[in-house]
Image: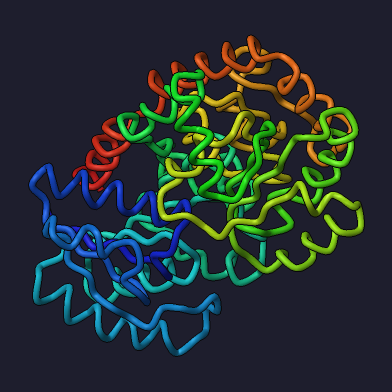
Amino acid sequence: MNILYVTNHLNTGGITSYILTLARGLKQKGHNVYVASSKIGLLADCIAEGIVFIPIPINTKSELNPKILLSKLKLSHVIKQNNIHIVHSNSRTTQVLGYSLSKSLGVVHVTTCHGFFKNRLSRRIFPCWGSKVIAISESVMTHLVDDFKVRPQDIIVIHNGIDLDKFKISAFAAGGGEAGCKTERKKEFGLGEGPVVGIIARLSDVKGHRYLIEAMKEVLENVPAAQLVIVGEGRTEKKLIRLTRKLGIEGNVFFIPAVSETVRILPVMDVFVMPSLKEGLGLALMEAMAAGLAVIGSEVGGIKSLIRDDYNGLLVRPADVNQLSRAILRLLNDSGEREGLGVNARKFITENFSQETMISRTEEVYLNA
């Protein structure tokens, strides 16, 4: 098959990781793979593998932006010239683009829903879903059926997959296997010797950073050497920095720009926290679990399908600062429980979320679409 992925950008993030995983995996299976986006971003590393990049001006969040039409004109030529069979969109604006290409050229359109959409009138009047819709979790499927009336028979739940081999070293370190290496990695990121609580997520209100920072105020009253590492970029960064200063904990909170490979930063962490208010699944959480870290997550969305409370992590109520701080302290003060949860977390991801399964099941969707 000839497959075209369409995305707004290829910067660090869950959607980019998803596309690169599928692109590489399906290329290795013998398919021809094309990726269209506004910038080449992280795809640059895949070009040697035979994946073709197509630049289009799709850097917009507006469904009415002329950039969608310009992108359609360019991709129409690409689709005809390369006999593209599948167009796979990954956001609202690329969904509109993919739907338009499908209607005008007869190409099959597949959509992945990576999270939760606002129930806007335009989405209901002009749904633009693909002939098949991939939901990354059961909660996302429920959202599509209940809020947008997508037919259940058109939805396939395929969980994001993890490259488990990539996180073997991190898992070894999380279990205490490379203490010296962990110390050096901490120095690389400007951290001290104290225990590290971490989060990797875009800086957005929905990710719940505010509650984690407020919880750290209580944590530091009991474990003064503790450190919070916030990895990511986004529009709430300045607000979050101001909050750390207001609480007087700025010396223990470290803001680190998005990293191209989470495997670089995960080994410095002792506890990983995902305090989201909404979450489709949580790729960074899955990667932390694959790395053998003890994890804490809000009892929302796809996080509930990843964390089994007291078995492979801890669940807390969303926006509950006191419960979150108690969970963090519980794990920081009990290395045995941290290690046990981390071992079970990696085992759970290994058994349920391999990237091979994700690639094979997505290929099946294409073949049957």
